[in-house]
Amino acid sequence: MTYHGVLRKMETEFAKPVQYYLVFENDFINFNQLLNKTIQIEFVKHECLNCHLDKPIYRQGFCKSCFFDIPQAADWIMKPELSTAHLDQEDRDLEYEKKVQLKPHIVYLANSSNVKVGVTRKTQVPTRWIDQGAHEAIEIVEVPNRYLAGITEVALKDHVADKTNWRKMLKNDVDDENLVTWREKLKAFIPEEALDFYIETNTETEIEFPVLRYPIKPKSLNIEKQQRYQGVLKGIKGQYLIFEDDTVFNIRSNEGIVVNISVI
Image (cartoon, rainbow, N blue to C red):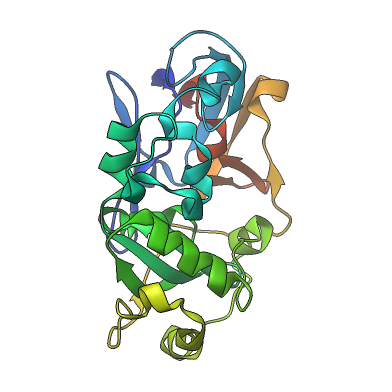
């Protein structure tokens, strides 16, 4: 059977283990059902997630012209502290920015390769943690807008990591941490504007991924360069497919690429 479509990040269902779905326009794949099966991935072309033209993908699934034009790729997406909708100030599209920025946001700790701090909209919990391959996570504050979450993250970055080591995460070379203790330790560094939103009592969320075998030396698949790849699927973690030969394929970083995926 062959599936055809443009790659977007896998949709997930929080279960034990997490269920992974790659959704195309007219079909979808539940990758959990394909564990231990041989899969072939073939590059077809590019398709910008915004203009849908066959143009080279620049970042985040968008061609270069769209990336520097649309509000979905503005700087405040990656740097929430740059959000200005709460001041009624437009960056690229104030209506869109209000829709996204003026919603409850969570500052959290997640443990994937190490303990890191991050920001997400409340509606994206626990999806965001799953996408990062975190096996445990906890909320620190719940604030009413993206700006407050952003300045809190910036303040905490001086005391805890804000990046994930993807190789370490995929090898499952991680230790369990007491995130409640981490949360309590970091409270002292939360900005005054956000301190009233600190979450006093909560527990860790634990996440189980569908992995039969973790890679020893993960090597990233560049499907655009290689054009075609075939391997036995051994697991899914974060937004990565993990294959028997230690090849890993990051669906998220290949958004905007049209592929054929065949089950051999």
